[in-house]
Amino acid sequence: MNAPRARRGFTLIELLVVIAIIAILIGLLLPAVQKVRDAAARIKCANNMKQMGIALHAYHDANNGFPPGVYNTGDAVYPYWSWMALMMPFYEQDNLYRQADTWARGKTYAYQYWPWGGFWLSPQTPANPALGTVVKTLICPADGRQDFAIPGSQAGLNGSVAFTGYLGVAGLSGTSYTSTTTRGIFYYQSKTRFGDITDGSSNTLMVGERPPSQDLYYGWWFAGAGYDGYGTGDVLMGAREYNYAASLGCSSNYVGFQAGRATVNCDQAHFWSLHSGGGNFLMGDGSIRFVNYSNNTVLPPRSRLPRQPLSPDGERRDAMRWLLLMTLVGVVLFSLGCGKEPEGEQKKPAPRRMAKPGEKGKSATP
Image 1 (cartoon, one colour):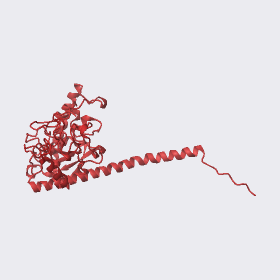
Image 2 (image 1 turned 120 degrees about the vertical axis):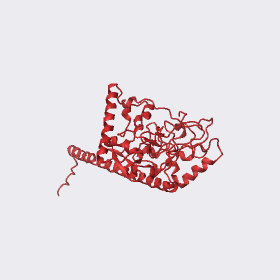
Image 3 (image 1 turned 90 degrees about the vertical axis):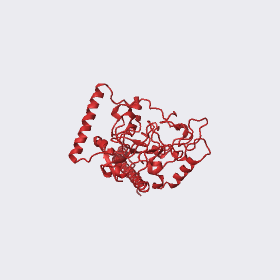
Image 4 (image 1 turned 120 degrees about the horizontal axis):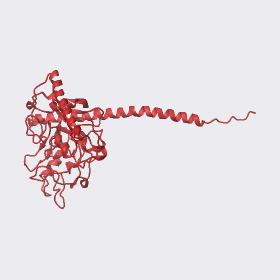
């Protein structure tokens, strides 16, 4: 009778080889999985923008014009409501619009019509509930911060605050909205119609990506007065926001379409996205274009309303002029030692300000 043969297990070397093979496979798969996730987020982001484009065109048809970038005509119902808030009924947010409208017309609390409530009072009166409502259409899925609202204790008011990753294109700068040669489709109290887009709606940027600021002071979708009282940084953004960057204590190197990081507060002063290589833009005709960061120099002329059509050669000449100007500015700043600050040495951001009735801008620090 033969004795039973003993089972042979893995040797240490064989086990290590198997572990090494598994590690290599994981290393090969992770980048592929990440690319698939990034592509899915980019497509979802573009779909959200497409829905916004359809809503904006429907609003235009119903009101003979696009919504104001920031509404503030002195009435006691919708002060500082953003273009996203005003067009809520056109992207399936009818219930939220009615809730916000009913609240703004109520008389239960002092300054109930004010979107941030009586934040300067003691005790504070409640803000409009829509201010803290997360709307999926208005957020980019690549940024998990936009999935949540922050509490009022963090925002400096009585009510939560929700965010957006999409800002209306205000031309060169949201602050210079009075200039008819530099403003875009959206600006403070704008009343833009298709007829005002002289270069053609398919050539003019209408909405771009910019995640909320690192400190979450800016990017409030429902009502945001911005750093300047005109909505810049909250719901509007220009292609060249030099004053915005300066107000944050940041150099002009942070101005212009370029890659950014959610951990760098200075990157709030320009359009950028969490997608690789560039960001989505909604054009005036409702189409979506993914713009590479290398096209920074042609962003300003595509952000403005009154511009003569350019031939391909003219477009290149325009880009070269912007490139030469920015190169000269960079040389001067470098010679003065005004380069980018290291990430660990970011200047303290300007205090979050919310406008009080009768004031231009915001004046409460959280």
